[in-house]
Structures are given as structure tokens and as C-alpha cells.
Amino acid sequence: MDISRDEQRILHLLAQGGKILLKKDERKTIHEIICLTRDGSRYMACDLRLFRKLKQKRAIASACGGPYRVTRRGLELVRAEPDNR
Image (cartoon, rainbow, N blue to C red):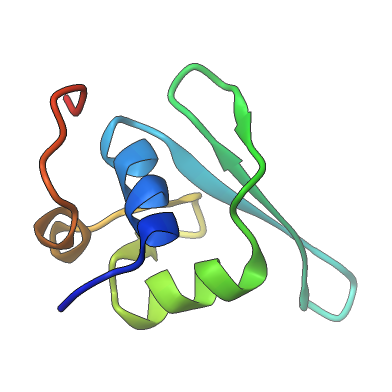
């Protein structure tokens, strides 16, 4: 399965130890998506459309109510880069 350049960038950040946090309102709908690198810097290019595409492809998942992280499926989808750890 081929993924877009934006999805590729997000998966690289997550593969290096990043995470995606969700802010929800009182009706439990997603209000804000925060993508953090392993250093704690915020990556602004992650939006709701991109988040839903990655979740639909099962490239990211949340465990026990924690932040979203890359899955094994996501690691298979991401192409190798020299700076990936």
C-alpha cells in the first residue's frame, strides 16, 4: 500500500519515538491534534484528515487510553530513511 508524503513524515516522527495526543471537548469529539517529536517539539502539519487516514490504515494506535504511537503495520508502511532509529 502506498502512502502520501505527509503520512510518511508523520510515521517517521512516530517511528523515532514521537506521539500524537488528542484534545477532546465535553462531547468527546476531537477538538485538537497535537503531534510531538521525541524531543517534545510540536509538529504542526498533522491535522484531523491525516490522523484519520493513518488510523484507518492501522498505522497508528492507542493503548490503554494513552497517546497514539506507530504500530508494526505503520513500521512496514514507512520507507527507510538514514536518520530513522
